[in-house]
Length: 133
Image: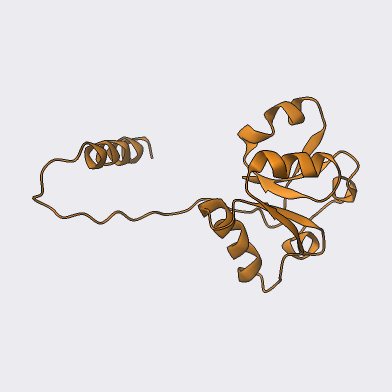
């Protein structure tokens, strides 16, 4: 998840871009209430600024197309804008300080219940991750 702007955006000429700078731009939000939305919304709240939400849409493709039309900027997953990055239609803007979009998720489950394929999968993934760190 990164901030993306169209090719003619003023952020591309700036040396640094802060959350405060972003809050002054028309922002296109997608998927209200999703984890991604919550992460980005928290970014603004934790910095004590309100985002200038120009429009909220249901799909990231719609958000991307609005950014391509120059109607605003948006935080989007990279997989959504891969082609536009390659074609230099959209550009990633690195913010200062860098935005961390990682999120921790806690799972609560009852021990001793019948085996869960899902929980076994998660435990194995966590064990693999610990081995590599």
